[in-house]
Length: 87
Image 1 (cartoon, rainbow, N blue to C red):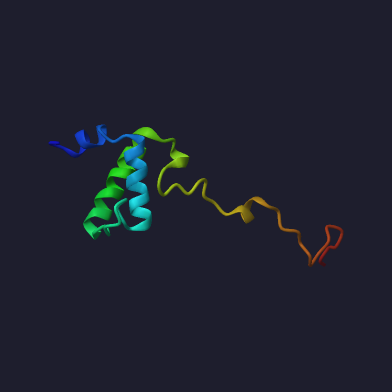
Image 2 (cartoon, rainbow, N blue to C red; image 1 turned 120 degrees about the horizontal axis):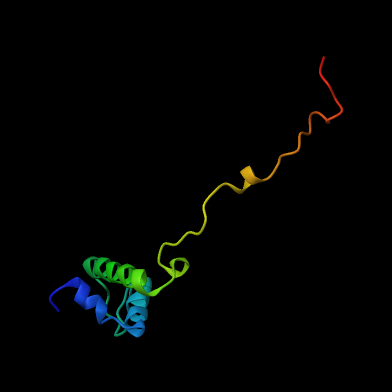
């Protein structure tokens, strides 16, 4: 393989799952421990493959819609009722 892009084209869903499992448990299927460099390269390959093959909500690092839910809810005023007036 002459480039990372060419390598990614040869990655099958099965290879992707093997890379993902290796990163998750820190070991190759044969039990050998991944080096830090191998973990980094596997993650890069996984993320790049996901970009072309998975919907956004199934990709590594997806966090869904962000925002504070409490801003959407009206907070009742427990100090004053609407009929209370200040003079």
